[in-house]
Image (cartoon, rainbow, N blue to C red):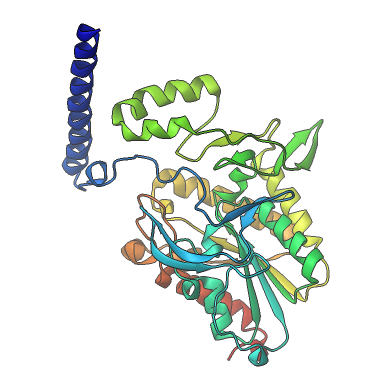
Length: 364
């Protein structure tokens, strides 16, 4: 037993030495490429996040949504850094704490989408829906939810209208080359969710199913570069799934992206009782890589194609954010998360305001 314990201790020491050496090697490699990245020594776990931060609650239709009545400071490094977030009694992010209802025009705007709409990493008043509310006389409801797929966001719009009645304006925000991919998943970040599948040649929405959120032991692999780089790929290949710290399971018979876009557009176009609605295209900072730019541009063309098919207006923020010299100003830590900074959200807000400006009665 004594010899065994000594051998275990020796192996552990050598493993720690090898781990430090591996982190030093990869760090030095980035420095030699001209851009030193010290995250392997400033962030011990390689995964950005394990599960959704603690402001979520389950929902039988949507899978999960913001927890009604939540209020608190979010500190979830890297990413969230002492940011105040509050969710109203209906499950929507509050944008102005002292909203004067008497100043509203009586018209309501519903914004749905993913974390770029919810406003990950920024305070309540720095999201683009908040900016829209501050610059207009509209009663703006921020229905964005972190991690949502595009079709999942349409479901939230449908659910909201069923519960609270029609909205005068609906803006469906889509992060290009990201959101429609999420609609292929039946589990994301340990939450079950609806997904789009192709069954016997028919594209359909598959309801949220049962999923046992058992302990996520693979999160431990993030503490070792060696295990992360060599063991994790083997586990993923055998299990036929992708893991980046947020547990994901692809839905059975998941539909192709073009079919998901088609179905999502059809459902969005079918929402009745609104005066005007539009799709807002948003982008993460990986558009500056050649590979991601090409892929993003192809999906962007598909969205425009199906938007025309269903006669849906499109607000495109590409020209305003595709500015390499402003990358660090537009997005937080583009190497990790890529959510918009307050400035980035203001840029998107200005694009939305130009679209709304066609009805000048809404602009202050």
